[in-house]
Amino acid sequence: MVRTEPFTPSTIEPGTAPTGPGGIPQRRVLRTELPGPRSRELAKRRTQAVAPGVSSTLPVYIGSAEGAIVVDVDGNCLIDLGSGIAVTSVGHAVPEVVEAVREQVGRFTHTCFMVGPYEGYVEVCERLNSLTPGTHAKTSALFNSGAEAVENAVKVARRATGREVVVAFDHAYHGRTNLTMALTAKNLPYKDGFGPFAGGVHRVPMSYPLRDPEGMTGAEAARRALELVERQVGAARVACVLIEPIQGEGGFVVPAPGFLPALSQWCAESGALLVADEVQSGFCRTGDWFACDDEGVVPDLVTTAKGIGAGMPLAGLTGRAEVMEKVHAGGLGGTFGGNPVACAAAIAAIDTMRSSDLAGAARRIGRVIGERLDPLVGEPPGIAERRGRGAMQAIELVVPGSLEPDPKAAARIASACHAEGVVVLTCGSWGNVIRLLPPLSISDELLEEGLEVLVRAARGVLAG
Ligand SMILES: *Cc1c(COP(=O)(O)O)cnc(C)c1O
Image (tube, rainbow, N blue to C red; front, side, top):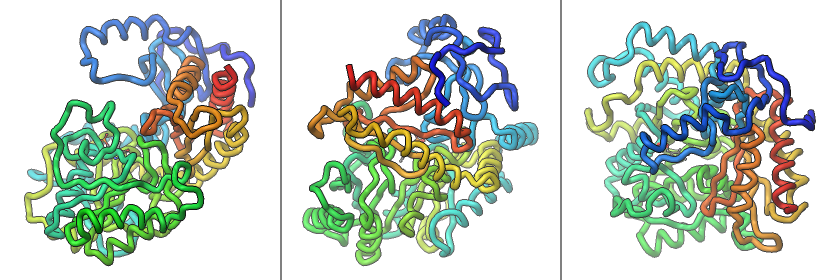
């Protein structure tokens, strides 16, 4: 569905942001230049009020959202190919989620699960235990953010093994707290000047097929990493190997087949735990419930967040029952962790994923993105590859004729998309990757239109 003129007539009055369900038409409508006057006004207020260390991708301020459309405060309707970083996977303002949240808010918003427990928390844990990879006995604990889930995975792994070292990978992203900054690879913007960081972290090379020696298999990449661990740390000191099965902020790096199974096998032989950080890749995003499912890898611990609660802050740590039970009562928890409203949202979101087969939708989205973006690779030069799985897809920008990262091209393409009302995100250790994380409920028509804008932007930037 190609639209030549970006400005289409609208039934929406400027400045009135209609609300769903059904109130927001699922199409791109640009009423003003982006950002419009109201967004510019808010940007001015923001500079006085908001700490500059917190930055935003989009130049517009959001007034409402539904499905795969976000509406800014000037009435512009943008196609959302980012889902607030893989969070609103079921779509914005899904009626089932809205209703569940409303109902729970009216009953109670907080008791603290460590004080007065409630059913929703137990139910989310039951779902996590049954949906995460493996049929073994599991238990879960709930937290507020992905970083907090990762922190707790490390606590559990250290406590259960009596060992201290955490093996993390190049290009990894695990959060912004002190321990998760230590686990995150990239200095700017995440770590610069914020140290010293928590100890006991040992970093090794990731399997990165585009940048690894040609033909390197997953097993060989795993050996490269584990040989370093054995020689520099000693396998007997390793509490856990922590890995994103598909890296998120690091550039949507998909390890070569065999890499994750080899890590898993090494962990089993060494008495270390395999921790899969599925915060970004989980909950149907890659076409399975979890990215580990693709190769049948069964981690000992799994962290979840982002897509679990349709936008309500919630995170989970799920692990083998015999590992989780090594932690004494009171060793895990927090005031807000597993908030009842967030749990209600998660239950409704997970039910929607299942009933609407959003894993199947993710696979279909992946095919559509591949068909549209593969012709761009090498033509015009500047895109080294399109990669990803399901609805977690990216293109990596390089200086033509080399593998030298080209973050400027990525930034210009992303800005051109934003100016046309299509939300795309960048990522990568060098900032040279454009990533797509559309809501899994997006229609083919809207997805095609968003991709059309991206293709045009990429051709324009790379040709110029
Ligand atoms: C986003 C992310 C985190 C951190 O989650 P927050 O909710 O931002 O703390 C951790 N791991 C991965 C893989 C992520 O993508």
